[in-house]
Length: 163
Image (cartoon, rainbow, N blue to C red):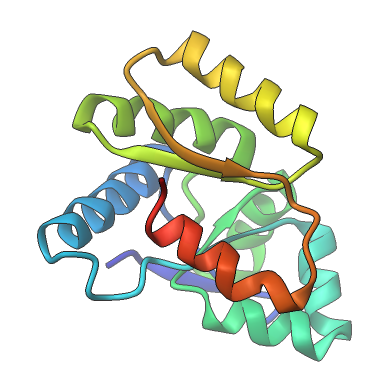
């Protein structure tokens, strides 16, 4: 779907923020039409610290290796692609910027977000801010990020079938 290069052994997409947003949107729309039969794209970010962690932590590396898309969340990755990879990463795609890019696209297409993470108050504040910034974006559900492994299936079910 997207072109990738290897930086420090990690597969990183060369795509711009606009291309990443387009790919994520296409995946969501295709899954919606297919009744969500296939698993969604697994997307991670990479910066210098992440590349370093991947070299030291085999579990983290394995998670990155399973990703469909790893985007360049650090300027170091863009620079390193020019020197080391033979192909240039288009631009830094900070997750905080990409999140808003995708919110705009999701709002336009009638897609929804499920907010998972942080403390309950922070999660609620995030939902309120998203509704303020993107009034047409549907928040399908939300949950704080403090749960143990025994609750994982319950959390996944809530994400897949929000109330």
